[in-house]
Amino acid sequence: MGFGRDAAIALGVLVAFLALEFAGMRSAGLVDFTIRFATFGLLALSLNLLIGSAGLVSFGHAAYFGMGAYSFGLLMQTGAWSVPAAILAAVALTALLALVIGALCVRLSEIYFAFLTLAFQMLLHSLILSWIGLTGGDQGLMGGIPKPPFLGIDLARQDHLAGFSVFCLLASAVALRQILRSPFGAALRMLRDNPDRASFVGLSVFRYRLAAFVIAGGFAGLAGVLMSLYVSGAFPSFAFWTTSGEAIFMIMLGGVSVFLGPLVGTAIFLALNDWITKLTEHHGLFFGIILLVIVLGLRKGLLDFAVEYWRARKGSQP
Amino acid sequence: MELRELIECVTSVSCMVTQLAAGMTIGMLLFLVASGLTLIFGVLGITNFAHGSLYMMGAYFALAAYEPTGSFALAVVAGTLGAALLGLFFERFLLSRIYGQDVLMQLLVCYAIILILDDAVKIIWGADFRNMGVPPAFLHPPFIIGGGIVPYFYAILFGITALIAVTLAWGMGRTRFGRIVRAAAVNPGMVGALGINTTVIYAAVFAIGAGLAGAAGALSAPIRSVVPGAGVSILIESFIVTVIGGMGSIGGALAASLILGLTRSFGSIGFPLFVEGAMFVIMALVLILRPSGLGGRRD
Image 1 (cartoon, helix red, strand yellow):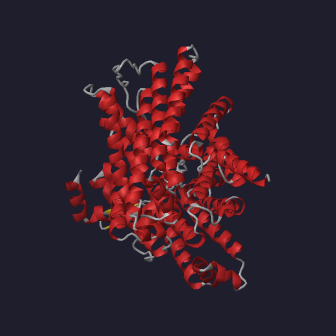
Image 2 (cartoon, chains in turn green, purple; image 1 turned 90 degrees about the vertical axis):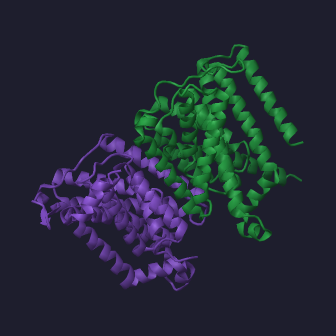
Image 3 (cartoon, chains in turn green, orange; image 1 turned 180 degrees about the vertical axis):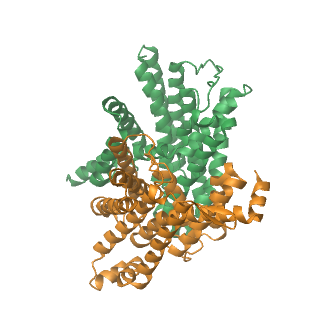
C-alpha cells in the first residue's frame, strides 16, 4: 500500500488526461487552464508541506517560484542546455537558494519566520528589478525561451506542455506524499505539534525544518519552470509578495489538513479569478472579501470543513 | 561601488551635514511606522502585516484634507486620525476575532485587508501617482550648517517626528495609561484581574499604532509620491527595523530606524544599487550575532 497505490492513481489520472487530449478535447481554454492548474497546484502543494505539515507559515514562497522561472529561462537562453538538464539545474539552484535563506530563517519563531521569508523574497524581487543586464528588469526576461524537443515531446506546443505539466504535478504529488508518509514526514508533524518534545527525543529541529524548507523550495522551483515554459519568459511579478499571498489563499480555500486540499483550492482560485476578471478590474476587493468570509466565517478551508462535517456525521451514527 | 565618493563625503563637513540631516529625517519617519508595529506586537502579540497599508491610507487621507484646504497641519491631523480610526475598526471587527489563533490566520486577515485597501484607494483616488508637493508655507531657503545644506522642510519634519517620539516615550514611561499598557504586555490576565478592561487597552494600543503609521504617511506625503500599493515596501523596512531593534522595544526601534536612515542616505552616495541589500546584510548580521535584536530581551 502507500506508494504503489498513489503511483497507480497518478498513472491512471495521467493516462486518462492524455487519452482525453488525444480524443480531441483540445479546446484552447481547457488546455490553458490545465497548464495553469498544474503550475499553481504544484506551487500550493509545495507550500503546504511547510504550512500544513511542518507548521512553518512562509510568506515568501514565491521567491523560489521566481528563482526557478528565471534560472530555467536564463539557462535555456544560453542555447547550450537541453530542457531536462535545465529543469534539473534550475530546481537545484532554487533548492540552493532555499538552503541559504532557510538556514537564516528556520531557527526563528513563527512571526519572525513569516516576516523574514517575506523580506528575503522582496530582496530577490528588487534584485531582479535592478539587475537589468541579466534579468531585463521590470520588462521581464524577453526574447522567448527556446524549447528544443526531447524524447518526442515538443513543449512549444501547448497540448504537449499541458501533458508535461500534468506529469510534473502528478510525479511531484506522489513524491511529496511519499515524503510525508516517511519517518521524516512524521518527524515534521511532531515538530509542528510539539517542538520541545521533539527536541527532547533528540531530533534536530533545525535540520528537519531546513530540509523541509529546501524540499518545498525545490518543488516551488519546478512550478516556476512550468510557469516560464507557459509564458515563454519570466517576470518580476513571479517573485512578488502577491504571488506568495495567492499561494496561501489557494491553500486556505482548499484546506491545510487534507493532502489534496491545496489542489482543490487552486482549481477554485483559478476559476474564481477567471470569473472575477470578466466582471471587474477590482480583483483585490473581491478576493479580500471572499478571504475574510472564509477566514472569519469558516475558519478553515473547504475540504477541511467537508472532512470534519463528514467525520462528525459518521461519528454521530450508532 | 563608488567608495571613493563615500570617503570624500565622510571627510567633508558640508557633505556629512547634508547626508546626516537627510538620513536622520528618513530614519525618524521610519521610526514612527516601526514603533507602531512594535507597540502592537509587544502588547497584542499580533503582527500587523497590514501596517504599511495604514501608512498608505494616512498619506491619502492627508492628501484629501490638504487639497481643498491647503493646510498641512490639517492634513497631518487628518492622516493620523483617519488611520487611527481605520485601525480601531480593523481591531474591533476583524483582528479581535482571531486573537490567540495561529500566525496563518493573522496573515490571511491582514492580507485580505491589504487587498481591499489597495483596491479601495484605486477606486476612490485613481491608480496614478499623486504628489502633494512641499506646502508653500515651508518653501523657505535651506539652513546652511558648516557648508552643508539642510532643507527647511526636512528640519520641520525632524522636529515634528522627534516631538511625537518624545511624547510616545513619555506616554509609555511616565503616565498611568503607559504603565497599564506595559503591564498588559507582560501579563494581560493579571491586568484584567485588577479590574482594568484589557479589551479597551488593546483597542487603544492598536489605534495608537495605526495613528503613528498614518502620521508618518501624512508627513512623508510632500516628499514621497503617494501611490496604491505603497504600503509593502515601508512594511518591509519597518520590519527590518523591528528585527534589528528587537520586537517590542521602542528604544531599539529608534536606534535601528536611525541606522537604516543613515544607511539609506550615505548608501545612495557610496553604493546606490546596493542600498536595500545593505539593509538586509545589517539585518542578517543582527540575526546571527544577536537574534533578540539590539534592544530586545533574550527569551
